[in-house]
Amino acid sequence: MTKDVKEKDGNVEDNTLLLVKGCNGKPKEEVKEYVKKLSNAVIQTFYKHDSVKLRGVGAGAGNIADKAIIIAKEEVEKRGDKFLVDLSFTTVMFGDDPKTGILKKIVKIETKEEEKEEEEK
Image (cartoon, rainbow, N blue to C red; front, side, top):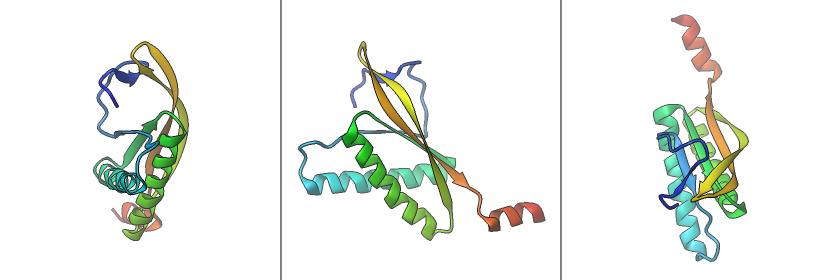
């Protein structure tokens, strides 16, 4: 996204926020590569911060985010971890033009093993 795109309430730096762009008109292989890179970013951010936010405007960005989340979820579950996805609307400013976007927040769920470990401490 361009530099003039920001949250309506300001441009606060958030290390857990990933901006998702649509890929309309792009070759299929390029879209697949973007989804793969985005899913890797989701996994890395998840393990660094225990949460991730993906924000996009438009159906294309939403579809890309969904695919990346599914891929990331499968990989995270292979490692024995789990997460939930919470959806909400957000307002994104494109210059002076407000647009409604979708914010997908991923949060870690403690597994029964982790809960047991916490109790033993």
